[in-house]
Image (cartoon, rainbow, N blue to C red; front, side):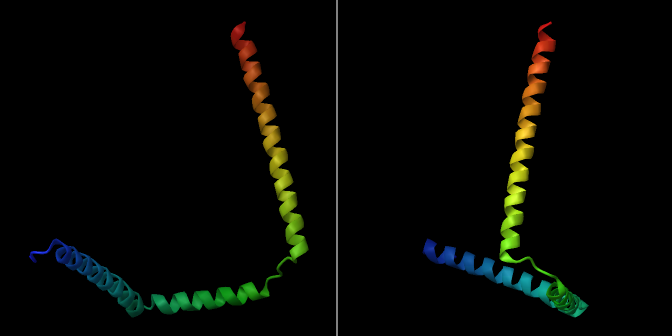
Length: 97
């Protein structure tokens, strides 16, 4: 062990990095050997092809849908608050009698 603590910390950090490089490299080599990387590459290519076939909304359609979803969330949230308030008061009235 080196006499300087800073040198010791550097050696420990470098050893940790080396271990992680070996582990990740081994995992990559195993995936390559088993053909997982080729299948993943094929999956990504097929996914990109399918996404090109999709019809994407225009900017105006996207803004309109976003506003509609926000309004729906507010209405549903308000309804939940009102129903909760009614049930709390109903339970309070029932428990008092």
